[in-house]
Amino acid sequence: MTSRRTLLFAGAGLLAMGVGGLAGRRWWLGREPELPAPIDSEGRALWSNWAGNQHAYPARRAAPASEAELADLLPAATSPIRPVGSGHSFTALVPTDGTLLSIDRLQGLVSHDAANSSATIRAGTRLSALGPLLADIGQEMPNLPDINKQTLAGAMATGTHGTGKGLMALHGEASAIRLVLPSGAIVRCSRDERPELFHAARVGLGAFGVLSEVTLQNRALQRVRKSVTLVDTDQLLRDWPALAGRHRNAEFLVLPFTGKSALITHDATDEPVRPRSPDQDSETLMDLKALRDLFEFAPALRRKAAQAAMADIPAEIAIDEGWKLLSNERPVRFKEMEYHVPIAEQVGALREIIARIERDAPDVFFPIEARIIAADDAWLSPFYGRESGSVAVHAWYKEDHSWMARLVEPVLREAGGRPHWGKLHALGAADLKPLYPMFAEAAAVRRAADPDGRMMNPYLQRIFG
Image (cartoon, rainbow, N blue to C red; front, side, top):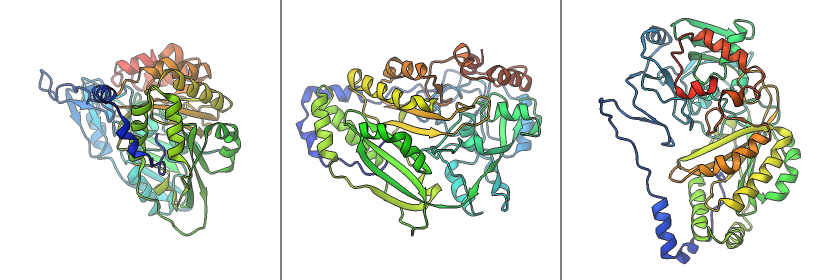
C-alpha cells in the first residue's frame, strides 16, 4: 500500500500553507463514516469487516474448537453459513443473516516432516503466528502477503499472494487440505486423493465447505536482505521485467503525483542480522495525504513539493529471517481493488492507470502496488495457468472509491485481468467464465459439495450464477 519505510516528508511545515476553505472541505470529506446500528431490531449484533465497507447481522455465531466440533455443527447450522477469518476482504464474501462461523480456535501445528520441509497447520492459524511457528521447526514460507493478519484458510480461499519470480501464491504451496463439507463429512484432498475437490476448493471462497487443516510445502528457514529504495517511476517501469527476475522477491509502489516509486526487494543472504527499523509507513501515508490536501488542485506544485521532500532519501536495509520482513503492519484502514493481468500486460496497464489517476482523480494519495506471481493449477486461482502481474489501487476508508470502477477496472479488464477474490470488483459469473478455463468444472464440484447451497450468500450467488 504505502512506501513501506523511508519516505518521511521533511516538508511537514507545508501544512502551514493550508487555507481555511480547503481545510474545511477536507474536514468534511474526512469525517468518520456513519456505521450501522450495533444491534438491529431483532437484537442481533453487528459484524463489520476491517475496512468498514461490509456489514451483517448474523442470526447465529459459532466458533468451534476442533474439527470434530465443526463437523457436528455444520449440518444443523442456519444458512447461509459463512466462515470468517480476520475480516480483511473488501468484497461481500462474509455477510450473512444466517450463521457466521469463526475458525479462530482452530490454530497451531498438527505435524511436520523435517526431511521434506512440509508442515500440516490448522486452518484458523493467523499468518502472523505461522511465521514463528514454522521458524521453530526450521521451515519458512518463501512468499508472504503484505499483511499477515489473515487466517491461513481465509488467505487461501481468496488467492492471497506475495511476490517473486517463480514463487506461487499461498495456495500454490498447499499439497493437501482437509475440508469439512456442509453435510458434516470430513474429506482429505490432494492431487492424488479426490483431486477434483482439491483443485476446485483450494481457492474456494468459502463456498465448498470449511477448511480445517492445510499441509504446506515449505522451504528451509533462510535469512534475507530487504532493500527499500526510492526511484523514478518512469525508469522503474522500463527496468521492471529485468528487476523482477533478478531478485527472490520484488515489488514496487507507485506514489501518484510525485514521479517516484518505492522499490522493495528481498534476496537470500548470509550477512549478519540487521533488524528492521520501526515502521513509519503510517506517518509516510499521512504525509502523502497532507501533500494531497494542500496541492490537490495544483498537480504541478504537488509534484514539485513531493520531489523536493523526497530528495536524497537513502535506501533502507534490513536483514533477518524472511517471515520478519516480508509482511508489514497496516494500521491505516483502506479499501482496495486488485487485478492480476498476464505478466506481459502489467507495465502497460500500470502506465495507463497512472495517467488516468493523475489526470482525473486528484484526490488519490495511496500508492499503487505492483507484484509478480507464478502460475499454479488451482481452478479458481487468479494465477491458473499463467504467470501474472498484480496491480492494486487503494482509497482511504473514509473517502469515496468510485474512481476505481470508473478509471481503473476498465483498464485491468481490457488487459485480461482476473480479480483478487478478496478485493473490490464488479464481475459476475458471465464475466468470470471466459477468464477461468476450469470455471464450469469448479462450479460443478461446488454444487456436488453443497447441493443445497447452504454456503451461498448473495455475493457468491452472483459469482457462481
